[in-house]
Length: 424
Image (cartoon, rainbow, N blue to C red; front, side, top):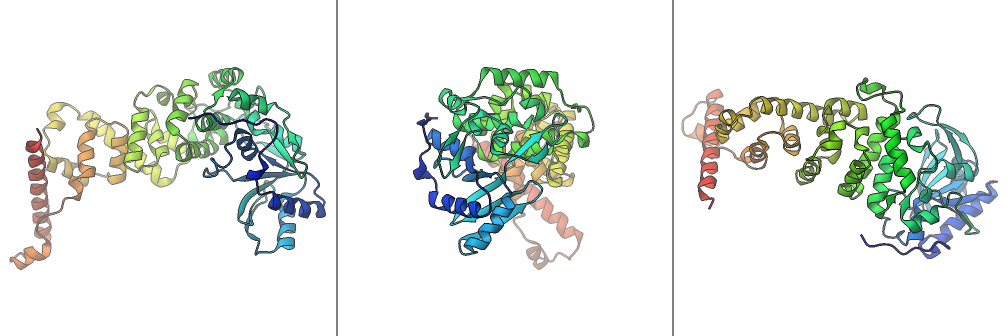
């Protein structure tokens, strides 16, 4: 990845919808809100010269923080500007935040807040506060830079511009990972996307914290008791990483930091993990499903991350198929099966195409036979239809089904033999 240009003096305001932002400021001032700032990724990427480049990512184009109520501000915008300009909006009252689309620009507006973690890994206690406290609650210094509107003054209390110059990711304080281990996953996302390294003190914190494991929950404990930062919030960060980032780089970074043990010790040492994820892409299986299925105790991990029920069932069925293959993987047992035998085995079991595809992805024994079924054999049909059999004098009933199956299996074996003999 080529290095970006860096302007630590000021943002490139030509990249920002300034008229729209100034309109928000004017309405905010009339509503009694006198401090408004652009924060986070938009400021970081403008300083890097990457703002336009990263607009295709899942993060909003513009994040605003206000010292006051974000919801009251949006209500004032609705009243002042009307639906022709403010086309849609959403309120999130628990956090006093809102999403709007103003003049075609997607904008997140948040009330400045302070966060206190009463227990490591749990959700923080939130209170309304000021802009400086809001910057203090963020993950990395490069995301704790703000630009005030309308003065365009840059606020950089944690020397984020210095880390941009160094191309480093620095956590804000010494308990950042202890409070919220999902910050490690975010670090992997940013490192892969921006081609940044963890600062030495941050890497040390990641490794020491994971080794100490300060959370009041361990991998062998009941999955449903895991704190949010080791369960649902961890899943959401992983989904963003696998769906929107250069995941190969990000996963390798997590491995080099010793951070995959946040999920499962086997993932940290699994030499086939990248292979498994590449096959997930080929077979259009969600990468997170395959990542979890590659774990030693994949069923428990799926429960902990609270994957969708369909994903959990696929992982469970895949694990059952893998266990059967392991128990019968000797050459004499499986390699002597004909293609039709494999079809009968797979189609008469409790497995479906999704769980079989997942078993292919996790490098199960004899997975290539499963791939042949998934890619070719299951699509082959009998050369004669039920209607044609009836026209030939067959009586309607189960015998027709059996004959269609026999003809299909015969055709599968013949096609497999032709393919085998045609190979050089």
